[in-house]
Length: 178
Image 1: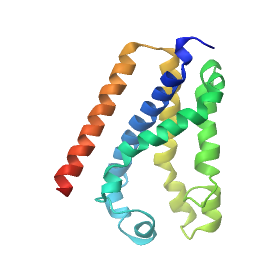
Image 2: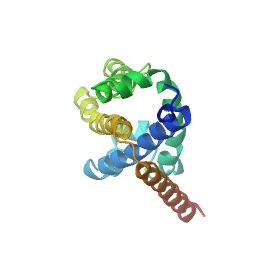
Image 3: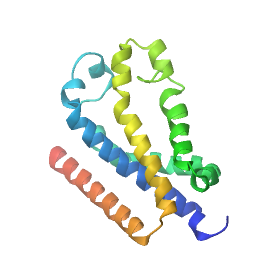
Image 4: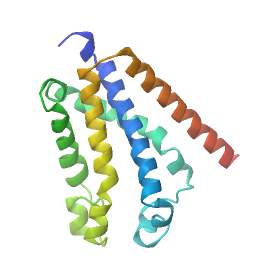
C-alpha cells in the first residue's frame, strides 16, 4: 500500500480532478438540456437557487475544487475498497448515492429528507436527480478506471482541463463584473 499509485496527494488530485471535470460536464449538460435558466428563475426553485448570473454560480465549478479535496480526504481510508475490488466504482457510486444524494442530513430536494420536509412536488424532486446521479456515476467510473489504466496522459489532460476551466471562469467573472 506504500507504493506511489496510492499516495495521498495523487489520490486526492485524481478525486478532485474527476469531481471538478464531471461536475462541469454534468452542469453544462443539465443547464442546456433541462433549461435551468428558466427553471431556476420561477416558483420554488427561484427561492432555493441563486440566479444563474450570480458570481457564486459562475464560480461554482472553480469552488468545487475545495469540495473535491474534501472528497479526497474523506475517501482516502476507503481507497482499497474503491480501487482494488472488481466493482469498486459501484461501491463508490453507491456510497455517494446513499450518503450524499438520497441520505443527506438536511432536506435537500431529491433526498429522503427533502421528500418528507420540503414543499417541492415529489416528481420534481425525482426529476431533479438526473444531473446529480449522472455526475456521480461518471465521477465513480473515471476514478476507478484512472487507477485501472493509469497513464501520465490522464494526469496531464486533467491538469490542462482544470486550468482551462479556471481561466474561463476567471475571464467570465472579469468580463461580467468589471
